Length: 164
Image (cartoon, rainbow, N blue to C red; front, top):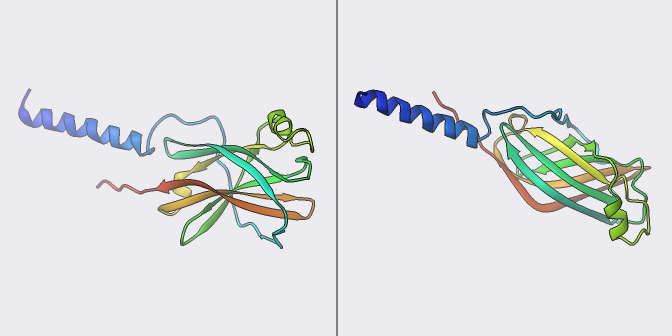
């Protein structure tokens, strides 16, 4: 094998590794990507205490996923709408979530004071739906006229790599 062919093969392998590790190529997920929304934050109730945990933020093949639970303290979790909040210094985005079945563990943890069984959520977000930057991850909830938002200590970084 000639030296130039070897160089080309190594370059191709490095390119594939770069594309896979940055999430530009790979297998598709079965979950539908979340839709971005302009959410009107109508009178966020500053007195509403938000209990939440963003349990998992993972990156994979052009997407990243967010999973967790959230409740407005002292309110049952039924009929709560959840949105993932991604906030940078320049822009804030809101994304739909999928409610992921029952979370009796959350109700049990809080000593069954309220029914928090419907508090689980997840979102699959396309990286290319965001401008490059560092985003803090949070939760925004709407329930029966109460609006609450809380940011976590988790961050995602969106980068763009252009290869010509």
